[in-house]
Length: 81
Image (cartoon, rainbow, N blue to C red):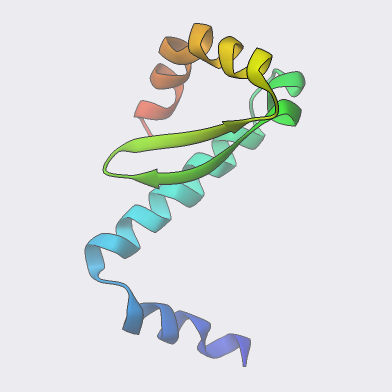
């Protein structure tokens, strides 16, 4: 059953969507390697589309913190996108 999942993904995703999905997976890997463990625990990457990363914060305080870290995060993840 699980061996056929790649074939299924190939059928439902266009090549561009598949490429975007692979970039999303790469970004999630990089997120796990971030040195700031507090950031990892309080925010997570939920989506990647049209070269835009969507990050969900646990609460408004962390959302505000992400605003301050936005430029640093862009630099870190630009290479993956």
